[in-house]
Image (tube, rainbow over all chains, first blue to last red; front, side, top):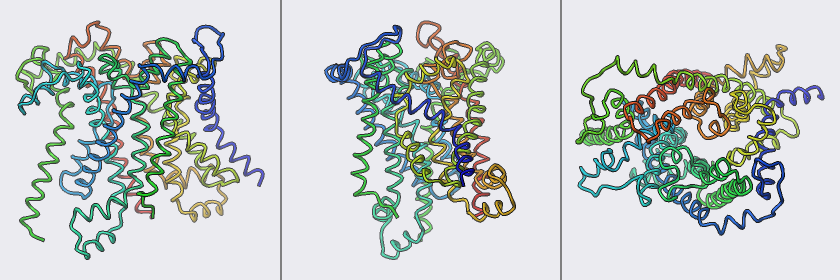
Amino acid sequence: MKKETLKSILLMTPFIVPLILFWLIPLFMGLMISFTDWDYISPKFNWVGLYNYRDLFTDPDFLRALTNTAVFGAGTIFFTIALGLFFAVLLRKHFRGSRFYQMAIFSPWITPAVAVALVWSWIYEPDRGYANFVLELLSLEPLGWLHSSETAMLGIVIFTVWKSIGWTMLFYLGALERVPRSAYEAAYLDGCNPLSQFYHITLPLISPTTYFLVIINLIQSIQVYDQIQIMTQGGPGGSTTTLLYLYYEKAFQNFQMGPANAVAIVILLLILGLSVLSSRAGRRYIHYE
Amino acid sequence: MNRKYQGVHLVIKHAVLLLFSGLFLFPFLWMVMGVFKTNNEIWQHPHQLLPGSFDWLRVIKSSLTLGFEGYILNSFIVGILGTIVMLAVVTFFTYALVFMKGRYSEVIFFIVLSTYMLPSAVTYVPSYIILANMNLLDTLTGLMISNLPNVFAVFYLRQSFMKTSVEYLEAARIDGAGHLKTLWHVVLPLNKSAFYTVFVLTFVQQYNNYMWPSIMLKSQDKYLISQGLRQFFIQDGAYGMNWSEVMLASTIAIIPVVVVFMLGQRWFITGITEDSGIK
């Protein structure tokens, strides 16, 4: 018995050690640093208590980053999940070409954000880019896209939705596969039309997947960085500076480790708070078998 | 039901899907076509999708002068070697968690799973300091080691391991196989598709990884492809002067990951059919 425990510890160690080294200790250290005024270069630092946090919540840059992140999150999560489900429903049955369509929708997800963000910055070019060309065809007003503080975030949201729909669709395809056929047969016998069948049977039965996807997309959208670094660098006029971008600027450009880690802890608390909130809300709507 | 109605339905479905596939693929198509265009052609109005000529020789010549081989090699080292080591570590851990249940197995799994919710940003500054103390800053080894605790992989493999029927394991044990033998000869083959899936997904993630590598890798010969691409884009000063070259660089950055994914795609299918054969 004891030998068995020893073996199990031996098998777990190679994973547990890096987990402690690069997750648990950093988490604790990050929290500690957020209570200091450390500047990374000097070995000395002072404890400042909650000063960094109080400072953040009176700092207009931080408050704007918070709003920007909320706008970005709301926009991407809603459209990614709704469109992901839409395509999964269209593609759930195998038919000629379904595999091609799946690959087409999934392809943006596998490509490096940096590479495709470069292509998209051409698409968004106000004078000669493709986005305004399409708007012109539809006889709509051209937009400033990434060059205007009013539309830059819209541009980032569209790009992100384009990139992440495939991932969501993949999870929904799996979930739809697992809905038992008998559930549909019963509904068919009861004379349900396809729409109410979708609403009363499919949606409740895939709700655990929806919950999972909301949480995953939440975590990801609060941590958006790559496309913003490439496409706008937080601009114009700070209109696309999100929390993680602000964190990067504070930590690795200005070396204000205290405030930077305070931002990181706020990101952490936001994710925890929102997941608790959505699991509360979910309890009423999520259907577990 | 009504044949005619079904036919119309199918046409609409294909039309909608074709339109959307076009939208999804358009940026790639534009990028690849841009490789063959001159800068004037890229900026001409109204837009033309096809370039004036497909000058393969010029494209091949300028691909060779880009100097991206080093970045791609680094990305592959991290994406393949890093992922294989990560898979080994995670497999041992998950095996012990699922098949050698002890008093604390549930607690350990709960702790590991809860870190999945944490934003990795919280760990960047401290991990940077820890790597610096280990003398692993600015090394690919450091990057790979810090990527080892992959909680998604634990989560995914655990789901799959739990479906493995206990009879096979017991049969192996009766035959006198130890844990490592059982793992290699029973658990591994029975969970092939889960391994392929985790491998391909992690490879894609590591190959594309940008923020953390660009924080901890500082010398240009260590850069991963995304960092190298960004460097290429900003080094000429004016942002995006030579779009034809930018399109070429982006295309070259994308091709390897697409190829690996396509190869993995075939393995997914084999894995899945094998899995359903066992059930």
